[in-house]
Amino acid sequence: MAQSIAGAVRPPFWLLAELTYRCPLHCVFCSNPIDYAQHDSELDTATWKRVLAEARAMGAVQLGFSGGEPLLRDDLEELVAHASGLGFYTNLITSGVGLTLARAQALKAAGLDHIQLSFQDSTRELNDFISSTRTFELKSKVAAIIKSLGYPMVLNCVMHRFNLPHVGRIIDMAERMGADYLELANTQYYGWAWLNRAALMPTVEELRVAEAVVTVHRDNAVSRMKVLWVSPDYADAKPKPCMAGWGAVFMVVAPDGLALPCHSARMLPGPAMPDLREVSVHSAWHDSEAFNRYRGQAWMNDTCGTCDERGRDFGGCRCQAFLLTGDAAATDPVCPKSDRRGSVDALLADAVTARATAAEQPLRFVAGASKQAGLIYRSDANSRACGGGGAPC
Amino acid sequence: MKAETPVRPAMAAMFRLQFEPAQDSWVLLYPEGMVRLNTPAAEILRRCDGHRSVDEIVAELEAAFLRGDLHGDVLAFLAQARERGWVQ
Figure (tube, chains in turn orange, brown):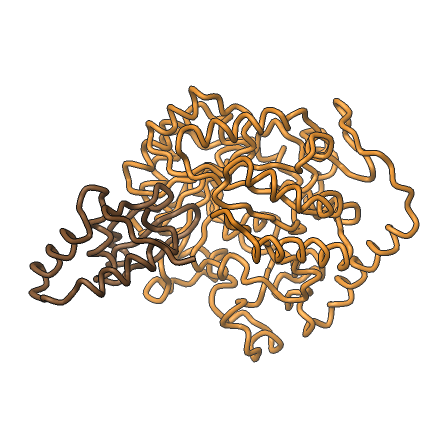
């Protein structure tokens, strides 16, 4: 039952425009849905402009252009100019592939405020292995282009068992490139990362060692670069305040126009996500059953609803609850109060066992590989093979 | 490290200052974030354009708010803003 509680609900602050699921990279931790190949329609330029205008009119102020790789849309400059004219602070979240000097200049002229560039590692070997592309040199050149044009630059590196031992070198690389922020984004297990969780999972010890390197850097830093260590919530056993609350500040718009409360929500059972080809952003945010489903605290079970932390962590992550327990309304299983915490501990224990038994193999980029070292690359073929039933394979 | 307040402060490139009707306040926008400003902070930062000197900013604010003693407050705020990287 949809309910309108518009009077009590604040407008979205953040709009993430996933312009396309197409991407030249094949990262094994991609947050796009595993079945993305089934959702290959894309909003046209005029519809995106309407969506942006509606969100801005409600008060949204931060806008991310993401994907997939947003540079694959040749109307990106037009959309940035439109958004900038509306008064959004515009962020481009990119792999760097396609960001030539000419395009970076055109985006600057269109009013783009900031670029977040992804790296997969500080070494060419691992960067190229994890993304299954030869992109390390290209990304290094793109970082120089971004800085030469005076953009604020955030480097983002998703962290997992393979690159955690390199964290010090990743920080040094970001410093050399002149990054303003470095996000060390410990893998969140959704989408392709969920599919590859066994192979990506670090041990608690590996995480603690890496975090200690970050702490030492923070204490001794001479540069202005800020380093953000995204909490590895499985190991920290502390539910994250996911999206700062369901339907509280954040709206994702998927390439095909579905409005989502978070990147992963389209895989949840229950009410259909609102389709912005048919309804307004205002209606999706305030009136849709999907956005109201886990808004506030009324949906919480007794464990969450009586917990002192519920005003800070908002009950953790609904997608994580669904993936680990099959019930999206369950207590987030990373929480020690969850009766399913054992399923998280088992995944962490498996990582310890794997390290003790597996022979390390050299990781190297192989063109066209669909699987390597127990990892399934994000690709159209794998998406069709693994995403067919809607459930993770 | 004590931050030196520049003679002619300017907003750092990372930050953008604008009025948000939905918030009914001035805000500082930066990559993926926002700080809502109180009125005195906004009135000072709006004048950090790289052209006005600190003395000129103080004089303007004293005239606008009919106060004669704002020099210390403005300097203290600018030192904080410098430490947070808002102005350079």
